[in-house]
Each structure stands twice: as C-alpha cells, then as structure tokens.
Length: 467
Ligand code: SF4
Image (cartoon, rainbow, N blue to C red):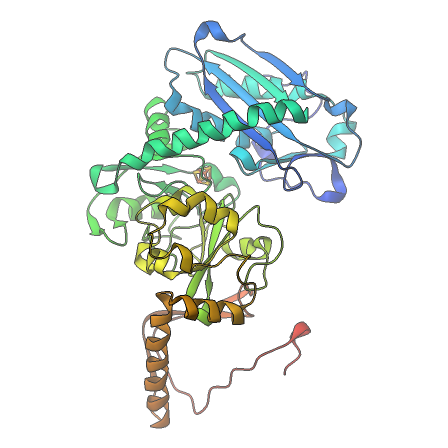
C-alpha cells in the first residue's frame, strides 16, 4: 500500500499522537460543536461508486488557522460478506485510521467525535479532505478485505450535517436496541476488543450481551460479526469458560484472556462492579461512574457535561484518574448503553447506589431505570454541592441513606476497638486515595493489621495549606 501521493506520513507510529490547542490548525467536531457524527453504512454493490471521495461544505484549505467546525464522516461499504452487523466495527476503525495520519488526532466515536489537524501537517500540504479520504479508502480496503467497494463523504456544511444527524442517531439507537434482547447466560462466547491498546496497553474491552463496550460503539452482535470475518483482528471471541460468580460477572475465560492481553497486569475481572476487580478503562469511555465517599454513592458523568460535577471536579479531571487501562476502584469508565443494562453495576447496588448524574444522561436512560429510584437521583438542576446532595438524598429517602446507618455503626465499632488499644484489622483489600478524589497516589492494604496510637486526618485547603 502506497501513500506517496499524500503529503504527510501515514502509519501506526502516529497513533496516540496528541494535537494540543497551540499546535492545532483546525478542530473538527469536538465539545464546541453541537452536532457531529461518524457513520458507516452497509450498501448494495450497485449503490456506491468505489473509492469516490466527496466533500460537502468548506474544505481544509478554506478554513482559517485556529478555527472550529462541525463535522460528519459517512463511510459507505459494499461486498459479498458485508452485512449491517459489521457497520459498528467498520465505523470504529475510523478512529484508528485517522490517527495513523501524521498530525491528525481523532478522539471518541459516533456523535461525539473530536478531530484536530496540526499546523505542521497543513503546512506540508495536507490541505484537503481528499487526502484523508484516500487514506481511509486504502486502509479500509487493505485491512478489511471483505470491503469490495467503499465511498467516503465528509460534511462540513452545518445544514447538511443537521440533515444527516438524525439518521446517524437513529442508526446508533437501532444497533443498541438489537443487543438488548439477549442476556449473558444465553451465550457461551463473549467478545474482546484490543483496539485501544495503543493508548492503554493493559486494556481490553470485554463485550457481553449485557455489558456494551466502554466507547459505546460496539455491541455483542458487532463483536460476533467482526470476529467471524477476521478472527485474528482486534476483535476476537472469548470463551466464557467456567463461571466463578455469575452475579459479579467473573468467568475463567475472561480472566485468562485479560491476563494474556495485559501481560499479567490484570488477572481477574468482575464485569459488574466499579469497586471490586473492576473492568479496566482505556480513555474512550462515554461516561465515568465515580465514587462520592461523603454519601457512599456513585455519581455518573458523561464526556459532554460541561463544568464541574457535584463533587466539584469536571469530567476531564476524573477521566485522568480513570483512564490508562488500570483497574481503579471507584473510578469506572462505561458506556451510556451499559446504563440501560439490567446488570448495570449490580454488585455495587445498581441504581440504588447512584446518587447523581447530569440531566441529559438521565433523560436518555430514564425509562431503563427502576421506577422507584428514578426521581430519587438528583441532577445538576437539583443539587450541585455535597451538602445539598446529602439533604436531597435524605428527603427523598434514597436507598443509599440506609448504608449511612450501617457505616456509622461500623465506625462506632472501630472506635471501640481502637479505645482498647488493640489493632484495627483490614480483611481482604482496602484502597486509600491520597491527595483527595482523583489524587495521584493510591495505597492498597491487603489483609493488613494496622497498629496506631492515634489516627489524625486533616482537611487541607487550596494549595495544600492545612486548616
Ligand atoms: S473502547 Fe473498547 S470496544 Fe471501544 S474501541 Fe476501545 S477497546 Fe474497542
């Protein structure tokens, strides 16, 4: 495959390259744009013109340096083996292939894409989407030989994007709804995805009928279709093996493949917990479930939420603590579709443990939440401080309030143990975050016995000044 006619390099070496604001020539999609999308559609052979690239709206050379634009990418593919179940997987490859282009950065997926081109690549002559189209056509055809014909259309005209936007959203919804008819015990095979290992080397997504991929772009059906046509590709079958614990979602087959793909870093995964052996998080998650220790609950925030959440931190700060392919108890990357699953964080209490989420997320999943909890979970329209959150939860008699009584009783018991001068035992595993939520240090105690004459916990103000 040759890219000699492309004015910049193209290759896997550029994957993971970041384009900072000061180096950016243009930004396409991203948080400043309301409507953006990328969509792959399966077509009949006669319906598309092979290798045709079309730009609808201003091209790169018409855009001012430092400017922001709405953006859409439509990839239409045809071939004997092409079926609609492959659309999600083909669409997800756009992320990988755009990132192969020197000086281009692609983040997120579907309705959330965020792309930047840097100044250096523009100056080298990468000044038209035609080049990007050619790169996509060649990479798709060489990497996915089931694609016999491909046509690429870029949209930068806001009116044309608006016309196509609803079609894209409807298509995503149809794909998501399809997987809802199945449950994990109905199948003996899950699917794994390693596409994000270039960013998070120890991460794989385990995709089951009831746990959608973290990026929200790949369902169990998508995984099955991809593994069938390309079993050695980045999406592969995972035999469930023996069930260690059906409720927490721990299986020998999942543990085995996690250990293998993470080179021994991740050896056990409980698919349905944010605290105990949680599924790893790369960086592409649509949302984060984050612990709010003051109320022993979990908040959820999605990528598009602007500003601070109820704990005073924005999505971006918590994303740093969550990402990287680690298992971070209490900071858990997930997709919005997983929030519609009946097994959503069921080990931790499911929705009975969720104490805050943005209004726009609540609207999207409202009908999937248990009826008796829906109105007990506040949004930014109800509370924005921990103090107000506590009051709200108490007033609404949120189930998490019962846990406060248990904790208070436990604390009293511990205080009694300390008064005797004896030790405090920490059975199993306990994690302490140092430096506040999202702080940089984590200390794990395993089966520890801690002796202390006195324990002092000081509250610190801004700049670390002790109060
Ligand atoms: S988030 Fe998961 S499923 Fe999505 S591309 Fe990354 S590894 Fe694959």
